[in-house]
Image 1 (cartoon, rainbow, N blue to C red):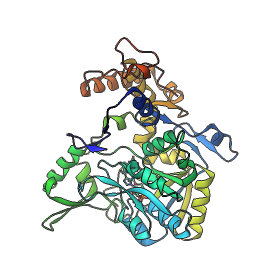
Image 2 (cartoon, rainbow, N blue to C red):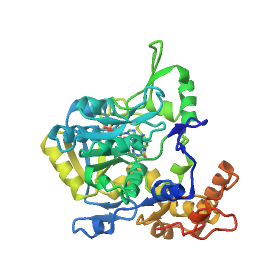
Image 3 (cartoon, helix red, strand yellow):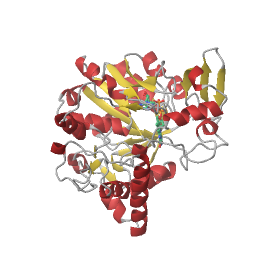
Image 4 (cartoon, helix red, strand yellow):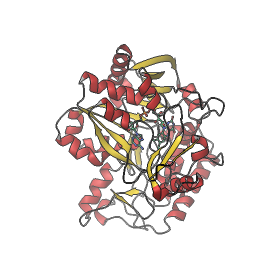
Length: 408
Ligand SMILES: Cc1cc2nc3c(=O)[nH]c(=O)nc-3n(C[C@H](O)[C@H](O)[C@H](O)COP(=O)(O)OP(=O)(O)OC[C@H]3O[C@@H](n4cnc5c(N)ncnc54)[C@H](O)[C@@H]3O)c2cc1C
């Protein structure tokens, strides 16, 4: 991964890129392939399925049982608490996830945490560019059991790669995700930093949230100056949604469908309440999807690493995450717009997208499809044909993406 001229992390080929390489990318890249969990999960007796939120065993509110984990965590510190417990019990040797990047303080960087102190250092959401899997090979080469925490798309990459990399199933004991609405466009983060009166080039540290829920956004510059902004004032000064990469606008799975546990915020309406944001200690919702996830939550509660609250359901998640709910209903049409236009888009399976789109008015779907294609055309006016051998049914434009339907 390399930093592009738009200050984003982008894959770059170190050697010449041939058709065979492109085929591998097509199979693994979560920009091109996103699939739900295996059908077996749905058949397990205690699995419930919601058309928007997917398969789950239970959905429960919780926060980290240890006050320090809750404090340092982005929301209620659940991911930090679970990571600390897995290390304490020895169930995993380390956790592969993301911490703040020293060289590019607005970015996240892949890290392997071996101790509770390491895990605490990585607590909090990184809204800038981050690529947690850049150290995957190194992690697998250690030959030790580990846990992975990341975005739903990171989990898709892992699942796609596991077709040809058996060590993923062997060594990764738990896959935890946070529900992800998408990171912020990197140059926009710099603009927000500037709006806060700080020179982005002078930053030596950047903490987006945590130490309360959401807690302050804290920027420190080389001369030791610390600037704190309220999270909403930093990210969302105009009351709108923050700019995000195009791939995230069309994301077919922001809810971690293949995670053992997907963890979210619990703000009604999707954002913090101005009245309580300075005093809220943070509570997560946990979508516990697998038997392994259930066992982990149970063990964490027993050992004091999690404090469980009430069970909730899909309707509460809809209230906490209206943006995820709406995006799930729009995803099929957005991908279909790209397919029709001969553009690249993620091929999907087992995500119920078509079923959800069928519940929407035709005019809505048409609008989403054409609007998405317009955005794509504005971003990338020219279509670059893929290598000939990878396109199963080349369109007149010679473009990938015309091969199959937008998926299910
Ligand atoms: C880009 C982004 C978008 C999000 N969108 C939503 C949303 O739409 N709805 C919602 O409810 N919650 C969203 N969250 C998640 C939310 O901010 C919390 O991370 C989540 O509730 C978990 O809280 P926690 O207290 O358990 O996390 P913590 O205990 O603080 O643990 C966070 C964990 O996530 C890892 N991490 C942080 N940033 C990244 C990253 N960029 N890539 C990979 N791993 C990372 C850290 O290494 C750490 O292990 C988003 C987070 C991010 C980073």
